[in-house]
Length: 117
Image (tube, rainbow, N blue to C red):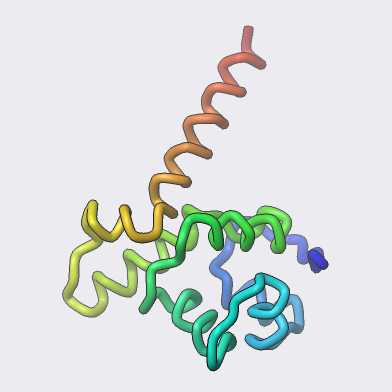
């Protein structure tokens, strides 16, 4: 159910709005449950809640790469910075998005190195 929006890497909220989707629609597409899935998604969007790695990867798939685990981690880091908190290794452990970003970047660097051979 990916909605194609031609743009470079963006934050989830920007992608969702550009795609013309509401919080409930995207939360449903991602399989987010609970009492208020849209509110849960909103917390991931604004960085007030750390996005789990598996969800960050699902978001990347849904957005066809427009929103990456790295952009989710950047949103979280900006939220923490803006609220006088630090993005720490324990935060990385909770969501894994920063680690995923490093992994994706490492893989990209490796594929570029292979292409150059």
